[in-house]
View 1 (spheres, rainbow, N blue to C red):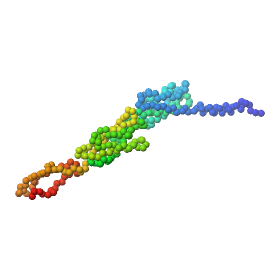
View 2 (tube, rainbow, N blue to C red):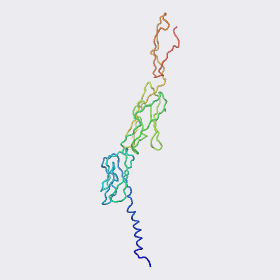
View 3 (tube, rainbow, N blue to C red):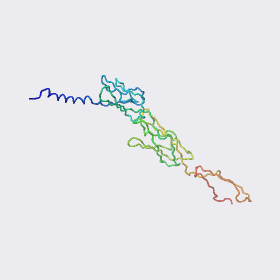
Length: 279
């Protein structure tokens, strides 16, 4: 004698209920939105997928975002500065009024070109010896930018925009193969003459790649170091004096004077007689 038909159908119903339970409780897929930084509070970010009769809230109070309980519309609560965030990706958890899995929401904060490139120090001092041959170079620190990507520093844009009217200097830019960063050198073209121009104030400019382009500046104060390239020069080419025949030994006859266009120890002058003429 076989089992009643109803009994044979029961395992099938039980199996069906097991298969349906996980499907009904599946987690909602992550929803991704984007918002541009520096937008005013109340800016619409996006609207999550909702169900009729459900209400929604964030799992915890968030300083930057809020959600409309019935429509699921996500808005900013404050002006967002991307550079002040620990990450430009903000993950939120949305809870509903029904016991379903939470919804994950990811907000990507997009960069705005709101920062200019900056150098580590706005003004520096460097030294070149005068009469330095062409090609002598010194390394300079490059600029950085709090913005990123297409708003970051254009390292190919470094140039001297002031203080180089004599054309004594140029910049040598070596871009990294990766495209990120560069090596920057200030190069002498030669012919520096401290006695003519002891100092230079060069203004180096760099731009970023954003729109509109923002600029950063570095003042390079160049001191030309002296070399002993000038001889002493007497105040006159001929000195004449009369000496009484009874002048005592050590008596002063005349005072000579010379000057040297160099400086420091290169300008120290020592006098001596090379010979006596006219006797």
